[in-house]
Structures are given as structure tokens and as C-alpha cells.
Length: 126
Image (cartoon, rainbow, N blue to C red; front, top):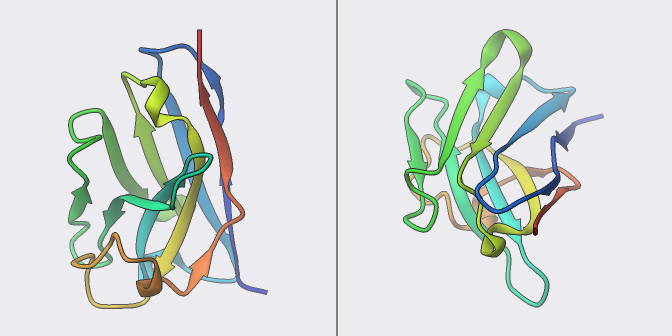
């Protein structure tokens, strides 16, 4: 059974850090572009970042650029989203997703992705 599993969410104070992990059962993440999305209450899900299956190129939206970093650990079949300097507006359920396409060029579009995880909650509050 093909499945993505996110972990690492939790409660953190503003300015703090979290590292989210995306692992897979039944598929090698190396064969996919892996994206991270988030959905805050009452808002649409939005793309945050993506790491390409070719050369590990990374893409990040402006709202988190310089604070969030995505990277892939092929040996562990895991993709991480390192989140620093967290703000209350970063609070959301975070999802990882796998895209079999050639690159992350349309990484913010949900329909580019074939497999999705169930999400992990990130709360940023003092």
C-alpha cells in the first residue's frame, strides 16, 4: 500500500523551530518531486515548498523563504521541512505530497501530486 506519513508537528512558541518529516511506505521518494503544503483553519491549502527528484533543486514560496528549508535524505527515504523563526500565521496542518512529474515547476498546484499524507498539526502560540 502506497502511503506518505508526516510527523514532527506540535506546539511551538513564536520564533521557535520545528522539523517536519515525510516518510513513505511502498514507494521510493527519490522517484518523486516532494512538496509540502499547509492548510490553516478557514483557508485553502497552499503550497509551501518542493524538492525536485532531479538534482534536488528546491523551491519555496516567498512567505516562508529564508525561514523554511526543504531537503531530502535518500538513505532514510525521508524529506524534511525545517521551519525556523515560526510565526503565528504559520500555524496549520502541514501535508507532504508526491509528484511523479519531471520537476517542481508547478509545485503549488495540488493536482500535480498523486500521493498525499494525512497531515501533521503545527501550532504557533505563546
